[in-house]
Image 1 (cartoon, rainbow, N blue to C red):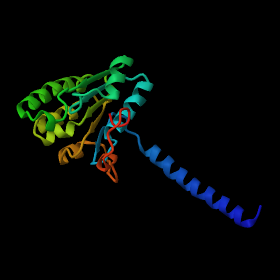
Image 2 (cartoon, rainbow, N blue to C red):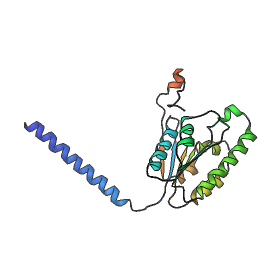
Image 3 (cartoon, rainbow, N blue to C red):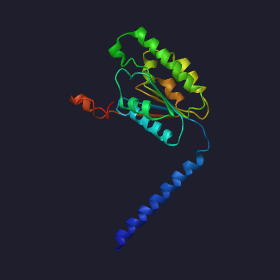
Image 4 (cartoon, rainbow, N blue to C red):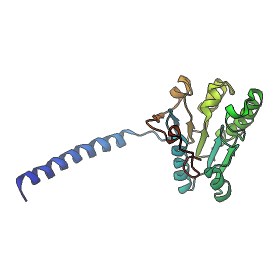
Length: 204
């Protein structure tokens, strides 16, 4: 083996050793065990998909999961078709009104949001739920369909070991401050803007 190749191997090994030391130190420093608040926001595609990935992880370990979708529901989605019929450890609820720009009924949307939030509140008070996903909740706050103070009070008083994932664009500073983890999905390109139709199993 030539010296150049040997040097590359040694450099790589040193970099990986330093990386391992850094990762190990971070793991050792994480000593608090509790459920966390996660906010998945931004204008890009993938927020709900990411949350549903965590649902699958939790179900894989046998944990009980609750999913409440605040916007979707007027049309069937792949996740609803699957979870409603295939897994006993998940409670899956959709508000059922669809998008607010389709209903164009503020009073009806507020009524539906309040009824759906009551279901979410019960999950957030029940310590048997390991993970609760509040999909598109941010819109309910942005449109003033739900009282922000009431929502945050419930999120903050949930069982210690319960993790909550909130998805949707925006949501406001208070929700960002509440979350332990905030990830923003940025749109670089979207097929829909090029006239490509949404696809079953990919977009819904």
